[in-house]
Length: 112
Image 1 (cartoon, helix red, strand yellow):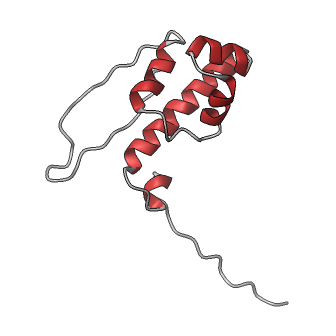
Image 2 (tube, helix red, strand yellow):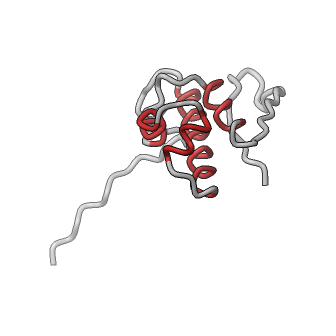
Image 3 (cartoon, one colour):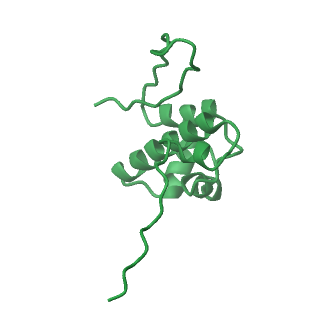
């Protein structure tokens, strides 16, 4: 029996956008997390994309693109406003980073 070579892999950083070398990876990750939340809300409320798009003030094809990960033309602020259109509160907390001398991080923390 022929022995298979070991599978090579790399442990990710937790941010795929940083791992693939995109500029501003924290912003990309935050946008992706906001879009995931938006998609979950639409699904939980059993809305069609057309109904959800109307509520958000965008066209259905644009919402479809956003939900498919094509959200480059949308700012974090605009995506947050979309969540507030679904009766969501967004709190922004600024606090010192745990490791002095290291850059801070941006994270979305979903409330229970």
